[in-house]
Image (cartoon, rainbow, N blue to C red):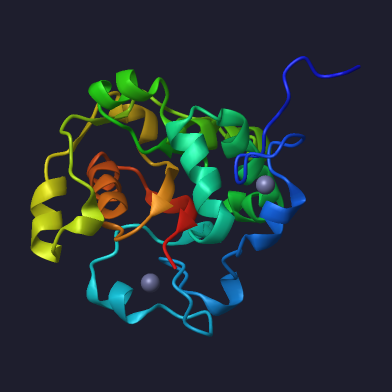
Length: 222
Ligand SMILES: [Zn+2]
Ligand SMILES: [Zn+2]
């Protein structure tokens, strides 16, 4: 059976695949053996990096798929901004084995929310698509009506450390928190840059009496 619509590569736009082999070959996977177990920064060995020692880290551990470089950037862009959910799902599938290995550390999944306004603009929350894929692989439920983003924040990487803290403050709220009490939560985002957003969301979840929080991002800045 022929395809009715040609599938275009989310990295380079050529016809034929959701992601073509040439693009996938440019992806750099985060290697657990040689990166920080909190933030995925390459440090040569599996050891907590200076930045994470400096910050009060509120999630116990992190799993990161790729470094945000090469064609992976284009793939994430088409996922986030051109509505290519198939590209996002394919990216998660590329690291399925690592996700399954990590799944003993959590018993439910919470996607990092976007504001109502952003949701209307984009039509979907990319973190939710990632969370659904992880849920299918790990056999753990996704809770999407617990953590809410109630304040629009500016892009964190353009700000100084103090500005970032101010920017993210009071950005999240919790409802139905009984659902996560005593639970090990996996918090999911598409991209990890400064970690400020993840730390603030983790803080709110722990305040709501989640037992622990681990973190997943599809990509992190190199
Ligand atoms: Zn391609
Ligand atoms: Zn680190």
